[in-house]
Length: 115
Image (cartoon, rainbow, N blue to C red; front, side, top):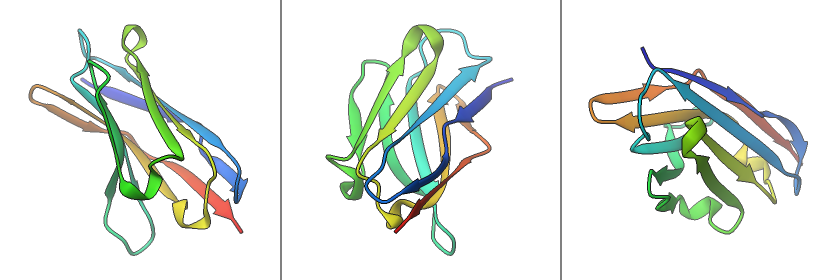
């Protein structure tokens, strides 16, 4: 059974930085795609960034140039470095992994950016 453990959320002032981590267990081999999504109150969940096992990345336009996704395949861990945070980045951030028939979600971690 796949389990995802997220960490690193919190409260930060606008312009600050946070780093999220997500470690997956219960999957053998290098996970095909690891990603971060977010959901703000009253809004739909949206892709923030994802990264393939070969480290090909994609980003939402709203975070390009500010957020960086990376991964450690040996640890099945993905990271999201978030810089120059804005109040509109406030949301619950969810880790997601896709690997063959697996499509699993973490429980989410709250990121709050104060103005």
